Amino acid sequence: MKVYYDRENKEYTVKAKNIQDMLKELKLNKNSVIVVVNGMVVTEEYALKTKDKIKILSVVSGG
Amino acid sequence: MCNNCPKNPVYKLHSGEQLCQNCFFKYFEKKVRKTIRVYKLVEKKDEIAVAVSGGKDSLTVLDILYNIYKENKKITLKALMIDEGIKGYRNECIAPTKKFCKERKIPLEIVSYKKEFSFDLDQVVKGRKPCSVCGVLRRSLLNSYAKKLQVKKLATGHNLDDEAQTIIMNQFRKNIGASARLGPMTGIEDHEAFVRRIKPLYFMSEKEIMTYAFLKGIVREFNECPYNKESYRNQVREMLNNFEELYPGTKHSIVSSFMEILPALQKQEKKGKIKYCMKCKEPSSQDVCQKCAVLEQLKLPQ
Image (tube, rainbow over all chains, first blue to last red; front, side, top):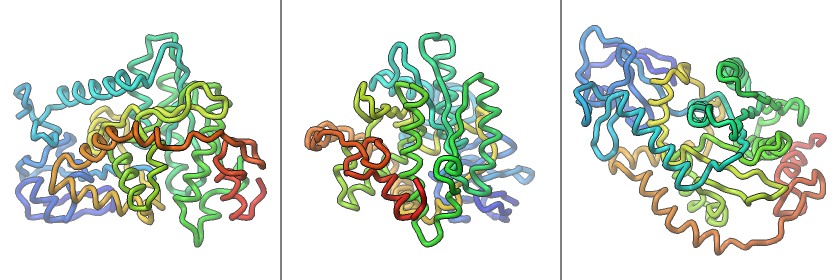
């Protein structure tokens, strides 16, 4: 499954079946990102589906 | 499922409670209103400038204050933006911020380093710590322009993460005196030299703010200062996020326990007479203020 991460402007392929495992697979801290699936923010329990469009947005902004 | 209604959750609080979009909006706005009320951040006839960077925090503060006070003719809002001259970052924030303010009919003042100091930040940071230079100059401009705008308060987008990081950084650097100047409202009331700072998002986490800003359509595009990754603060941020993951509620605990000792810290802090910088006449704890000292180091005209 393909995942876009905005902070790195990069697309990753993941095997995880839910958001919690996906963040672990990508070594991302759940407190530093929000995950948007098909345009909607989801929690870490969300079970991923094959056609889901997944975006990870960094919560870090400014400086 | 949301804990309050049969809808999909968008946010899980550190208590484990899950909230759908509507319940999350209610939770968020109620908590910000409570902070404003409990700490008397906004009072009758206040004139407020909101320091905006174009990021999620400052635009969320501006949006929330606008929505709370748009029908209240006795409270006026202005926006104040500092253009430090950071290529690929600040210049990309200006147009969306102008649009945001125009849509809400909020006057926006943009002040640039180029005009004030005759340089862009990018030109002077080589071999230096960019955040140290930028922070001093930006704070100085925010205070002086807030006074020029004749506002009573300056609202900033500082959040729970920022505050927890600053508390820890001050501890690590043995700079506890600086922590006495933290809290939801800082500064001295009715003092000609200072404009009081208020932080309506004081108890909101960065993740909560990003969720709110995204769902409200306040921000869509990612923007991060290119110098951010180099900063000491960024290392503390990562450390606290790792702790938060292992022990949910850590950041809330740091800030709420700090709030208990803040009155004692403020009492202990020497209340010396405020001096004025011999060069620029702005308030300073030393004979020469930090801004003039930084400009001197940069060997640039003031």
